[in-house]
Image 1 (cartoon, helix red, strand yellow):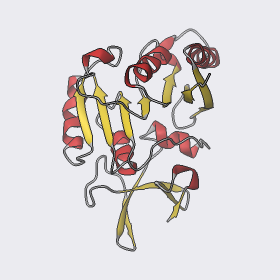
Image 2 (cartoon, one colour):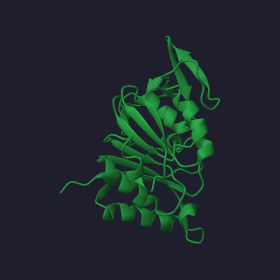
Image 3 (cartoon, one colour):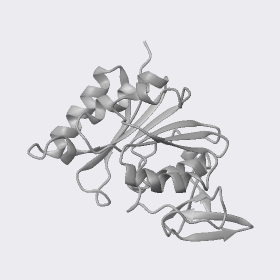
Length: 221
């Protein structure tokens, strides 16, 4: 089991598979493989079940999640990816926002296994509605399948003072008639217009069709 250097030693690789060190040994979230080495348990991070893992498998090198980091996760669904983020931020906090009530029920169960995860039933387009639950954060990570994906992540970056953002842009959620390439270009341009500097942007195919992960930082004057 070898750590990936650019992740700060928080993500590990073995024979082409990626893993996180389990915060709650013995507990699976989505049926993932568990493996133990030298008394430490690791959870396989499946790129077909997680867009962030897909990004890493596609050569992505931006990884702003640190051991004591505070993360706002928008579109947490049942908590599959968020649980791996919680693994890599054991001394931090992962604020998990989900709008769909059915998925939120599953998310509550996932958060119950990891004390550094907080489930929040809320609308990512209205950060003011959950501001009382969220502290200032270091990172905003977004996986929300609806229109205005770039503005939603930027609005939350501004609301909570985040330095770093990542957004998985789903082209078909923006416009089913336009080419994915034009939608990705428009999202990147909008992020720049909002005062941020893009540090990486790449397709996450073949794991997710018509998706691009965009990583960006707050621009400095």
